[in-house]
Length: 93
Image 1 (cartoon, one colour):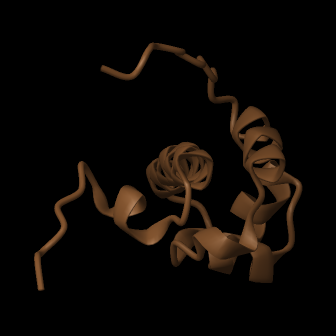
Image 2: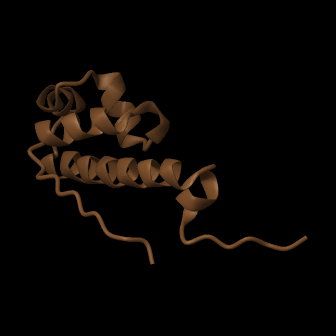
């Protein structure tokens, strides 16, 4: 059996390149939001309030439960966290 190699873990996990791209974008947003919340250094309830989400939802976010968040939801949460979102599009080599 020949071993497959992948550019990153999302390419290995996803069934299609479209799914991998979605996973990558969601992971980047989730990580940025989680980092912002950590820098705030406030209690969970206050952080959840700033983001406009519930504490259980914040818990999912801080624990990296990517499957619980759509790209759209993460964009909205990032905006609530006052993060500037920039989308870069480039051709695949």
